Image 1: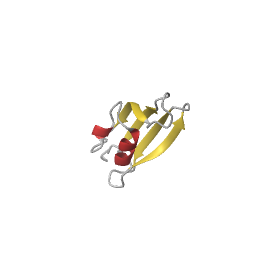
Image 2 (image 1 turned 30 degrees about the vertical axis):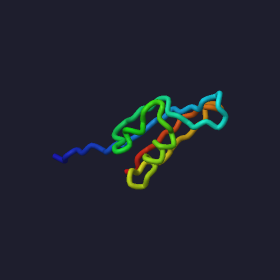
Image 3 (image 1 turned 60 degrees about the vertical axis):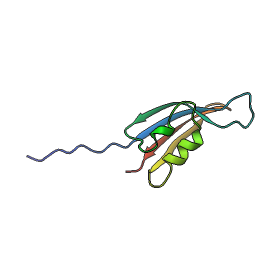
Length: 87
């Protein structure tokens, strides 16, 4: 009987971000995050209220291996990002 092996699933991170509408040019901040899998060692950057740029700098580092697979600006001050770890 042949052995059955599970197919490895990619790690996914969905980030909803927004800016302060009262301050033109304000930094993008994380509003909510959903993670499927593992985001180590960047887990500490994925908290509501944290700067989005810090999380992206960590996740997009070549050693960590995530890439943006979907990016959508939902309004002039908010948007969503979906990142997937390369296998």
